[in-house]
Amino acid sequence: MAAHVTLIESAHPDFPAALQDDALLGPVSRVWAMGTLEILHTRLLGFFCTTRCPGNVILRTYDLAQALRAASIPVIGGFHTPMEKECLDLLLRGTQPVVICPARSIERMRLPVEWRRPVQESRMLILSPFGAQHRRGTAALAEQRNRFVATLADDIFVAHAPCGSKTEQLCVELLEQDRRVNTLKLAENAHLIQRGAISNTPSELVHTLTLRQQRRS
Image (cartoon, rainbow, N blue to C red):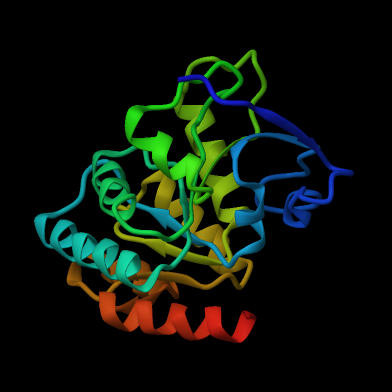
């Protein structure tokens, strides 16, 4: 199933203001969208998890995904790593809005079967800053995509980021910009917590996010 893709330029009323002048990503003048643009006006949780993570992190991240689904917290992410994909499957069983940002162009993208119903129900948006020349994802595009997600997110959650990884580097940059970076309250994330990330249990994080959602509304 091919869905309609909309080009949104900076003058469009739904173009996110955060993209126009951002130190993390650099200015972006256009994005491509498939789905419900109104989701961009909700408070979004940026969701990150690296490809390899310890078993304890995996279990707690599953717990968090279930809690986010139960609380209907809107989430944005690349949903590319195995852990992120598993969590997306859990989230799509709920009713909260989800924004998916592939690390490539979506101009000729065919919707996966499991995405079709959420798009039809106006609770999914697929968003990309990459034009038609970027038909396939690369490591460089993935890194840029993660910065794109972090720029659009109001809150950041990083399940795990190994020492020296690109994800840890992104966390450090966010913290240096006084962005709120949340992680799991686990020994495996001590290096992130020492850098300034806020440690939470899944229930603590969801409680905080729910309060922040209520204050925004």
